[in-house]
Length: 290
Image (cartoon, rainbow, N blue to C red; front, side):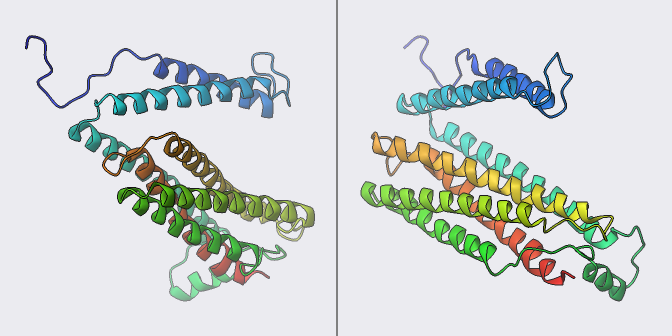
């Protein structure tokens, strides 16, 4: 047949989403700077309307773009070769996220080991430096209360999302639905506990000490790491909610469900990162508080 496709690759038709997404991201960045600093294109400090407009544009782009990908899958465009490409793309995305947290851990250990700008040449000097971090006077969060509850919450959510994935693979759509619902509930619980923890830290001013000139370093690294991880949990929860909606509307089969599989990969990545954060921020360094 003349004009028939003779390869396994899917040639994408013209799409507005790259341009729309880029424009929305630019608006959001300008709006964020104006919101926080003011003086950008006449935006007054504290005015978050431009930022919100940009964020709305990004969400609209995400919805439209991913909806198109789902339609392509239903149309049979996701051949085995295309499916491999989608998997490679998700793997590379998670790898980039891993490197973000590697950069943060690098910064955290830099602060912990070299916060006094000295050269450490022996094991004993390294141990002494670790023992002096967090800075004197800074009260840390106990690892064995809310952080432990959140650790158990995420570990349990890892089992429920695995249950949902296995159920979908064997055609048990009801089991997949309940596994997803439980995972989403646990993700929301994690976020709620973290918000409560942050409120407690700010109310008690735990990370502020007039006696420690570098107390702000500890607070900055703590909130950057746990806050970005919390944002990843929030994004992962939205990812799973979309998968649940698609599952309940008839999407996904035991043979074709990469959208859900990608969400499960992302969720397991979030789980593993939290274990490292819990071990180093709350247990190892938190236990050395003065």
